[in-house]
Image (cartoon, rainbow, N blue to C red; front, side, top):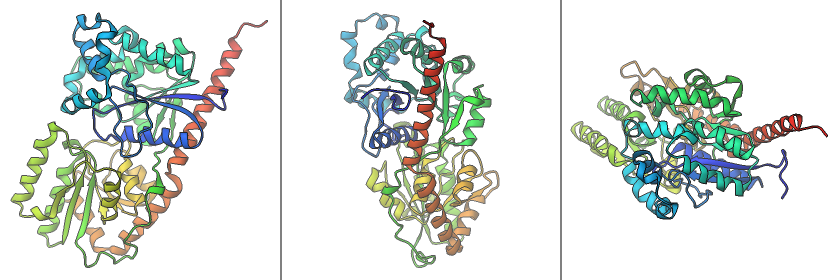
Length: 450
């Protein structure tokens, strides 16, 4: 198959999340899978660790920038001098998955130097990793390379110089990680990103909120930031079981949480709201599903102790890190979903998954949530600074089944029409082909004339 600006080959780099279900990983894998289904030429290459997704993994088996090698190269000069024949076994996917269980406990401050060294690109300790990635890409012969996040901005120029192709970078909410780095690494990382950003042809944000935030926070050229809304595989989400406004009138009202179990996702806020509701006489329960790292097990234990002391142990259930079928069953059992994050969320795929199931959402008024709820009309917002606001918002939906039903129906309709994986893929491909065409035009205009 010949490659032209209208029919390019894309090398899409996706950063594994050390065995976690990760919203960015799942979005990248869904995008690549849908593009492949549409007959597009795209290769999904995992970095750091293998991807973990609740759908079919379409990434290649080989992992580049293997997390173990990258870490050891950053820490020990002698390790960088070892021949590749002695270190390549450390990139085995099974070993990376095993070690990833422990890496999930790592805090940003523990990998501050590593973050900066990767951002240094060809001038950092991982220059050999970069060279091996370039060798692989030379074999693939892409028309364009898509970086997974701003933490890889430093490799943009070496890739452009070696391959002569445009480079795109996905924006994923990097501020949550980078702003937790200690000094001087925090300042240095932001400086390296601002410098490297000029070598990136386009940035992709899934929300208008984060596009504007990233332009200001990271000093990115706003005219190069393109918004491609999130999309979910809506065909996986059938008509909701509860179709009548009063269908839950004689059932226990079920509130759901579907995200990583960690302090920044705000599960404790939702637990407090449920306790408040039950103490006021409401008949409700909370179902929780999401990845739990070893480092966050004490957090969940504290929540479970809190629930027990409040006397509502039977109204709380942690389902674990659910697979695809378990997630869909859980969503079908909910009356409402809430993930009351402490931080300002850049994405929010769990919002679209809930709405695709006909489940309305209750979210704090910050980050991408106002944008998503305004666009879908599938939920309500509350002020997180007001005590009891979350419980009050949930109670409002409990007491008004007709409104709750309407939000779910409208949200589902909008997601199935405007936030599909097919639309996400088509919009992304349109950007890719436009960049490839511009690159070819520029290359021809600078070519020596006969």
